[in-house]
Every structure is written in structure tokens, then in C-alpha cells.
Image (cartoon, rainbow, N blue to C red; front, side):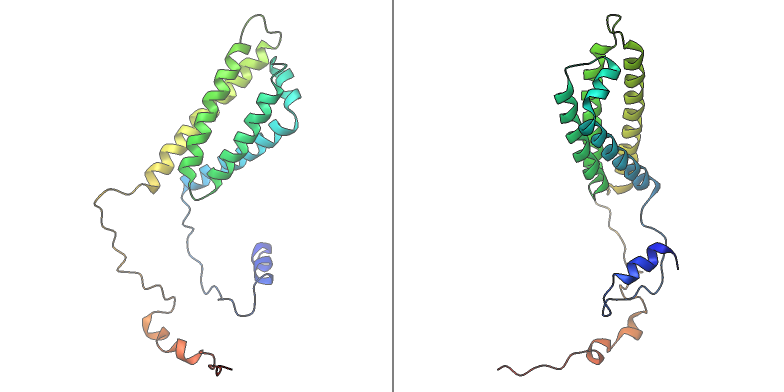
Length: 182
């Protein structure tokens, strides 16, 4: 039994259902990629909230600390949304945020900026992450979009882990005695 399993078992109440067997994860590689980008968003957002001065000085955008803080809050919200069930919305907001970041960094890529090299590196990094966000958006959309008119067949599922026959009558066997009204 691994550490995670033992911790989750310790947190369970005695009457909770027991996992009889595990199966493959329902998360696809697209979901895992989106999850990675969500955590990246949270980390970047915290860095932008905590150290906006260091970031703006590094790229030659002094005086834009409040804007970087606002971008940090936006990044955290996008990360939370990307980690949620609505990954597609979170990834879309990450892409929109990337466009804002690019627009903010472009003025720093001038010969007048003494930190032009850093600004070019930052812009390159944002462009690379934008491509990753776009790839993740397309992948998640492809995995989680239903075709109109498609009828899904759930005929092979019973919802009962031991099967229908093994489950018949279990509710009556485990029924609690009914108390008389006072």
C-alpha cells in the first residue's frame, strides 16, 4: 500500500464504500497536459504577485508592477479554471492572457531598453508557452467534444461493481430498523 492510499484510507469513515478494484485513469494525456499548464499558471501567478518588481526590472519595464500583479491574479484564476472540470475555458483564458503578455512585452523589445536581451528571452518564452496552450486547447477540445447527434452506448455498464445478480437484495439486508414516530 503506497503513502497516498494509506492516507486516503485513514481519512475514510468506517461506513464508507470500499474500492474493490481500480481501473485505468479516465484522465487522458490531454487532461494531464492541461493539468501541468494549470499548475504552471498557479506558480507563475504567485511569482507575479509576490515579486512584480523583480520581474519588471529584469525585462526593463519598471513602473509596471501593478500591471504585473494584476496579471498574476489573472494567471492564478486561469490556473484554477484549467485545473477544474472546465479545462477548455481555463486554457482559453490562458491563451487570452498570453496575448496580453505579448502586447505588454513588445514595447520592451527596443534598442532603447538596456534589458532588451532579457525582454527578448521573456517574449520568446511567452510565445513558446502560447503555442503549448494552443496545443493543449486543441487536444482537450478534441477529447471532450461530443459530436452532435452521436448516441453513446452505455449498454455494457451496470453501475454495480459485483454485477446485478450479486447486488439483488443487498439494500433489504442492510436496511436500518425504522423508528416509530414520537
